[in-house]
Image 1: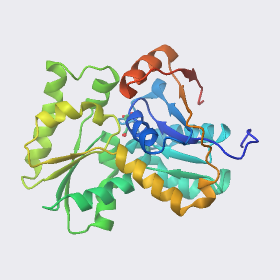
Image 2: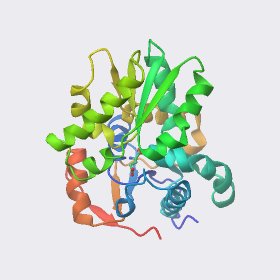
Image 3: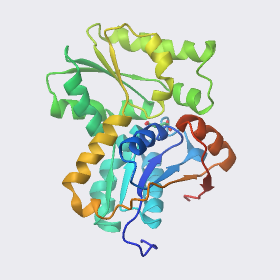
Image 4: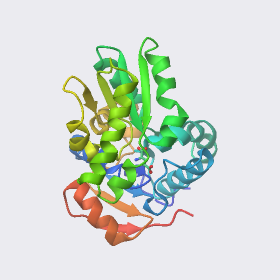
Length: 279
Ligand code: DGL
């Protein structure tokens, strides 16, 4: 499958759209020597309201594309894809299509962090409909921290608010407050909330403004970056295959100019993107 002959290759970072840039941003900060390829499936975003089968198919196509570009390791920088596709890809597809390559998600490291940060052991998960319905966070928490109480809230309007940059106005704030009030009312002992969608850190200031001071708000970027560093320490066979020229390339399935403009805002830097087809 790998058309590239050079053994050392960039790490692939995949998201349905712009959200994964909040993860990439931290990866670049904490792993500045590594090369990354970012792939945003903007043409088919949002994923959060789609069915299991569709999300799985789209995610597998993206992983195969990143493999064909040489990536030995792909991070699903998307909770919805991690929730709906990661396990099947790891267990069913990888042994068949690329037994020596790896695909990692964002849910496990986030759950580990939730468990260590909360003192009341009452935590909340804010995510897309797909992530919430999959109950992936509930299942992982049950495995690692069975004495915790976890409540969830699906926020289906938040990804469009981010993608269209409509969050910093009265209408946007209305939809943000609505879901914050809803999750807070589900458990009055909540002391930690996780932004379990990689788009949501873009809304961080607005979300924070509706939270009581004692509730901690966690984003995933640093958590995923630290967990990847740890993974590469433990998996030298993958680490030696990562190229390190400090380069990042960007691919989108939608208009290049839109991507360059919006991604540039999210990453606070100018960038050049290329178009890619996944179908
Ligand atoms: N950013 C993605 C996540 O972490 C999903 C956004 C979407 O609905 O496409 O879940």
